[in-house]
Image 1 (cartoon, helix red, strand yellow):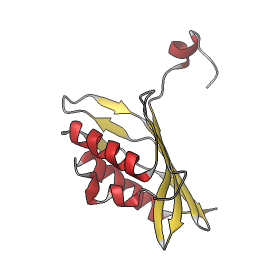
Image 2 (image 1 turned 120 degrees about the vertical axis):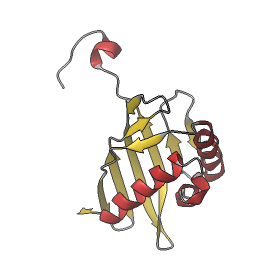
Image 3 (image 1 turned 30 degrees about the vertical axis):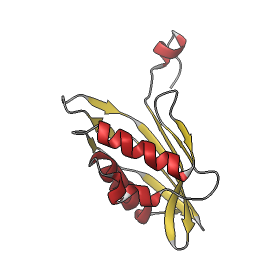
Image 4 (image 1 turned 60 degrees about the horizontal axis):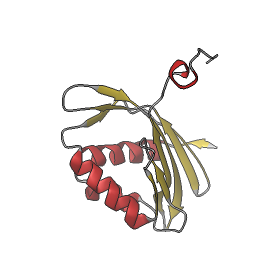
Length: 138
């Protein structure tokens, strides 16, 4: 595995495009058109597969979330051959100033010389006390 500054920059540009309200500007071009592409987000109903479905829903959500920004992105990124991945803990800032830290992992695959997203997973961390009703070792 090798650290990948290219995937760091690509991830940050993708997040900026999503927050801009115009994901077609950059982000949608980065979703793979290969079979098996998957996006999972924070809502239990956000489990989408296929390029068209993912880009359609990311665009709709980006437009619906006008006025947001994504800050504190500092992905850890690695690649090996034609596969790369990142892990990040950025913050979603809502128009009212509320900050929502979230967790993001992305798997990239190099297709025709371009890194494309084949798997995207975003989640909101929930304390063990809330989930299990007790404190657990972390």
